[in-house]
Length: 276
Image (cartoon, rainbow, N blue to C red; front, side, top):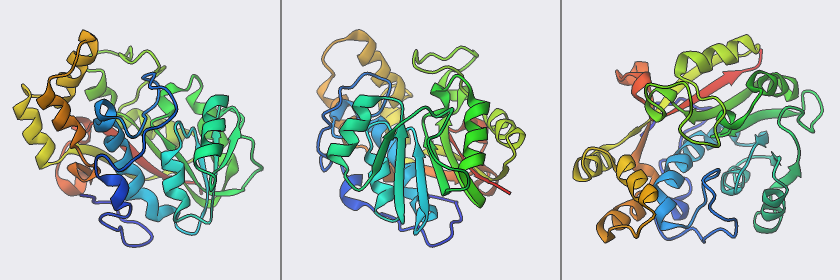
């Protein structure tokens, strides 16, 4: 599934109960389209697509002081808390902070602006920012803040939709909650200009089972879901069952160069960047 080299071995299923449909309790937070919510059949594809990155990069957080900048529902911060020395989560949304404090008590949830992280200099080993940077108005300022709070040698882990495949043919995001989407070259430039060294640029791809679902649903399981959402009508039972059955293991997280695939064809980009 993964071509990522970590500081330790990647458990092929480090959170097995959470990687199977139907085993994550529904969230109390509403599904708005801005954040991914676990435990919902219609949202399961997107949840698993996000979850695979947490699962595969979790070993980088083992026994480290971790900051998750923008934690959304909080399931990912809690997953990382299972291996990290400690996890601080910062989010601008007060309702999300209250939710995480109640649902995930091992995460130190704090309300704050990601452009002014409420942490001292050189206080974290790892900063995690998954599916968040595309929501930020000042991405460069956020990267500068990550550099500030990381210790020398610390790592910034970022995932974000690949603009080329997520909003093809346009610089204007389709998702109304996104401010600026990035391709691999643009994400690399943002990180390097911010003082980081990019250690890895990975891509999320459909594995064999999802490629089979693409073929089954007219060429794209993603487009099939979007069409149902836009129609505001009940989902066909077969499509709903297929979406609810997606697992995190159905996605591949690949180093494009090592795997011989085109990073520009990835669904999401995943960068591992190091503070000098």
